Length: 422
Ligand SMILES: [Zn+2]
Image (cartoon, rainbow, N blue to C red; front, side, top):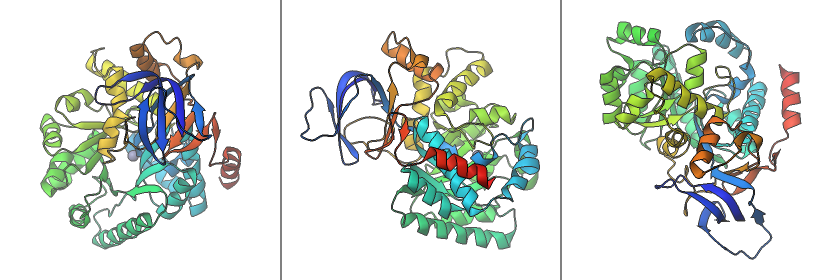
């Protein structure tokens, strides 16, 4: 495939170059050349002179099927939200509902420019089926929790081994993660066993330090704050991905930096559930690799990473009292190049020769991105004004969205089916 005359290409390369009027040559699933006047002898030539091209966005913390709970709970803090509304709703799920819920979430992600996501939930077999049908790229884990019950510990570890087998045999673009549900639902034993089985150094994804109550309970149960406890257990290293990390002491921030652990900032859900504000600027100052996630649509309530970037930036400005923090470039890095490092997918996150062809096109004449007065103005508009409706999405060298239409999924059928099921 040859993409001709792209009006702007936000490369996210080392120099963060924004190129103008260039061609991108894609062979199989890779970007093989970026330059001017490139030639190709076949029909697959895409004119992009009215397009802005960015790397596919990466949503580093999601629970796809929970889109089925969108709008069911408002006005509750996290613990109430979970216990009074979400857990009872989850008891009514079945494989078919989860499958269609996962499909709906891929529709929303694709239509707003996400190409890769890091997901944690149960019912993994049907989620794998849904993701593969969509053609998206994902990292998938199954949110282990043993609630300090030794019998459950053994069961959960067996579940992980089954998931790893299922993912290894899948023919799509899914790679496995080891996911631990939360510091309050995972025993020391479960965490220690997970370290032992992680011979392949897979990403370890976990909810950490989301609320004040969680920190207090960790201190009561284990005599330590969440990050200090995880550090003592030996799970913090370059594989570890802590979602939320809202309530951190200065000592814990230093531990995260020293162990090269990764953090996923989840600002909208933290605001909606009144968790607090992740100390993003402090984490970045200490050199922690930080990515961005939407969390589930039950807590957000959408999966639009452009909106997530805007909120991430504005939240740091208001909470630190400094308008200069979290500028557009820093914010864009969270959803692209930092996320690729976080998920250990170094061939994603930027548009460069040799990288995998996950690209997103935005209509240059979209109302919400105009006027474009300069290159830096373009990036600013992308973060603060664009509504997220992208025109085309390419994953692994193939179109999943072409001229605003899905190529792999039937939107009407999926939405109708969900209406029938719920
Ligand atoms: Zn979550």
